[in-house]
Length: 175
Image (cartoon, rainbow, N blue to C red; front, top):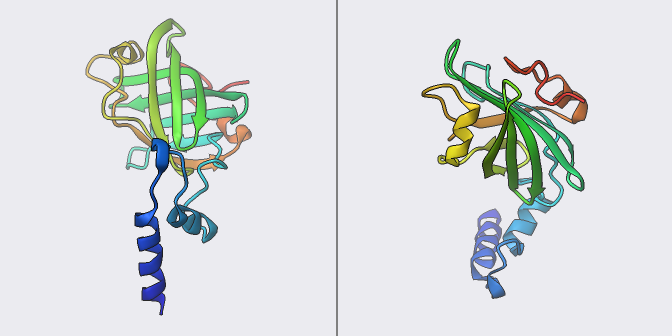
């Protein structure tokens, strides 16, 4: 019986036509998965919180402080050993599962321009694309890059984000 129900849900999800190319239109399969708690509702997820890399080093961090309506203040630290890193601060807007990041200061507090990209956020993890604009190199030391970095949500909320520490930036998402 369960197999038949699952097959029906899969077929229903595959048979829906999304007229007009609306990528944000929700299919019946998506709605059923959200109702069942299998996936997060992309219109209800919140980026605010403290994140860390899911790997063994635990030194990489990302934070976001704010809300969906007004946007977020963000900070990022990606490490490659003791002295090689990318570190910066900026802002973000959340649209569904896309976090539109604009990093505007490097770890030394110097203003930068043109480091804007869309990262994927599913409510639990933030994934930076494998290619970021060349301007993002201003955040990084030699042979370091933000490209492909990923972060898992460690603790949700603005209070948690406020405690995220950087290397050159004492608090990545301070006040």
